[in-house]
Image (tube, rainbow, N blue to C red; front, side, top):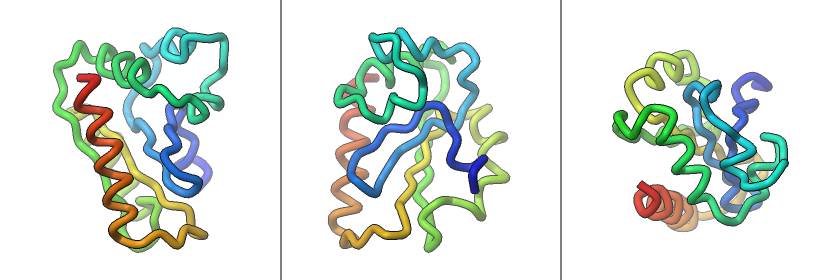
Length: 124
């Protein structure tokens, strides 16, 4: 569980919902993406995700299609986590996680996912 939730690029959209980039971040200049000297743990605090989306897409020269993993009942994607490495080689892979204490309705979660998709598409 700790390894699964240790992605250096995690963007918080609500108190209980985050989206994390599951690909290789070795070529990603996190400080430039954050436009400050923040470390990667602080990235989820940023309100403007556009620079981060651009920095992530530049790691693969905008050559990969985007894939988003939406979790099942566990809210984390634990059952699919073994596939993330292989998927991230072919896709710009983002994973939605939902904290266990979240009590959002399906409609609210859908709206959060749509907001993420809108921001991601605008930046690309």
